[in-house]
Length: 394
Image (cartoon, rainbow, N blue to C red; front, top):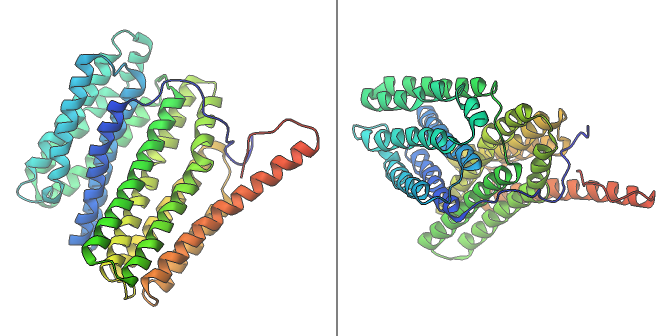
């Protein structure tokens, strides 16, 4: 097996529908709400609380991604159910800033309903597919406990809320381990496209947030330069994912012949493996916003921490995903991760923010360029030997 995930054309299969795209917008709004929470509480407790909320939001979205991959969403009753769930999730997302206050029921009640409705929709939608439904029998009895504990945590409040939500996350992890014993039927094209679109929507939200912050601050030269550097960072992140990672991950899923192993790979490569990628985008966006608020200064401690953590999570997600898929490490991205993190921690508190962001953008672009050059060299070498054009690898 190659040390890199092979990149080929997208496989045929079910494609993402407009209902799912509409549904995703609500969840990306929920994820971006976390930026405000971090702005309000920079302490370690604030990071823990934001991290718990991020997991809860991501897990709810992932649950509907698996369901939408397996069932027919075009039936009118199913459409109405998904739209109703989207409305409930919008309420939960709007209430996220008060999720740890005396008003936490505004978050936990709609959130719990979203999770329980998702499990019900998944189970009901597979009523004509007994083989796939049997796989759910190992998952649902465990998965149903987590949203109930989230609800209990919101009622309890205080430190008990944090501990109960941590328990809920532990149960979520236990549920996917239990589900690994079942044979889930995965449509690779749809599953890959779904996750690729949530990444592009998250990047889009980051760009919009940066533009809105710049307009609020005022478009003077320092602000414009920081905005340009922030956009260059987002563009480099886009390139780093969609140049080859997206089609390569889909191909790896297609190439897995065993249905049970394919389900586990989808879980690890996408459900678990894409969480740090999306989290990284959110944190980088938070850092760009912070830099735009003080365009002539150095990054403060919060801005430095979010930019360093965001870059590390984003690149680290790819490294972990490739390691899971192929058993090999992405050398360029490991080097880039270390270099970018050291750069941010060193330069962030000492040089103007535009220089710090420019360095991150250039670093990510160098990773993508190096990988592209290596793939081009290998492809040319095979063609010179008279072979067919192979799948490109970094």
